[in-house]
Image (cartoon, rainbow, N blue to C red):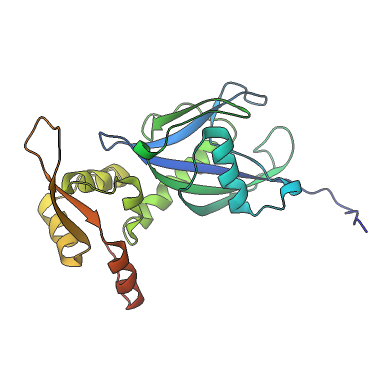
Length: 232
């Protein structure tokens, strides 16, 4: 039997803050331009309502919306926060479970679809006026990212598989919003011994080519099991 609830209930949606790093090591966020009302033509985070007919989990819904609205898939995704203000959506009371994602821009080409007329990357320091309460969600995601990169190596999700030490430092500077002392930063990573020297250098650059490294994820997982603390 179908159960009839006595009291009205809010709708449930998901929203995604997708971070990427461009070739100048600028931290960016993926936005879509809304095709429909409310906030038609305004920029917003990718997201949408849960599909009850698909029997999907919250994370499934977030990944589906990213794929449908922007063509992004197979990425690091983690739940961020739940936003439930009664007036956050002019249509009805909509609670949203927000996620944040990390991608390497070079591995993902955008493709706007469904109710998005366009998908585009924007610098975190130069965002347009956003629909709904999405600026609040973005602020919460940036705060979470800044805190988490200090104690977990999630920042490597934003880098190519082979990267220079300069790219690594600029990544952290872009996320944290501050300059870091090169010698101290290098010393810290060397002490953790988690970077693999690939015995390769950059190609096709107009300056002295820098050495290339990769992140030793397997070693990190083994060290973590023994109580190792990643700390920047």
